[in-house]
Length: 125
Image 1 (spheres, rainbow, N blue to C red):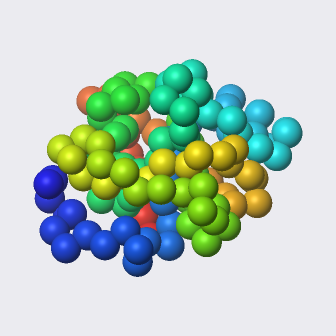
Image 2 (cartoon, rainbow, N blue to C red):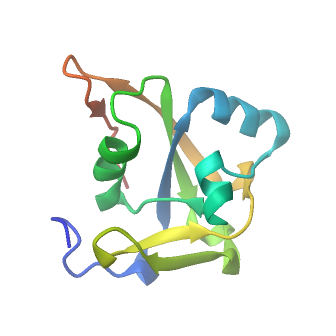
Image 3 (spheres, rainbow, N blue to C red):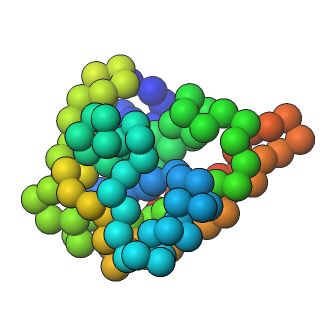
């Protein structure tokens, strides 16, 4: 597993993270729920990351994309629709088998790019 995941225990996680385009976040705010991106809909669940997974997810799936936001999502508000399933490197990732409700989002931060086009992520919980 990648650095930062040693001893990782999903059952202790209280916050998960979702990168998305700022326009998708505005739509979430407008309707109060997010059904997922095209990629999520194709896979049948909404993809999230734990704190130690966000940087790699940003680099792998959002390389050099600007106008992104990072959602801090309260695990306790997602109920049984949240499952931790093996994904990249057979590591458990959080997958939501329901729409994401705006009331589960605790915080939102803009994600800027540095001069080399890498994401500058805010401190994670």
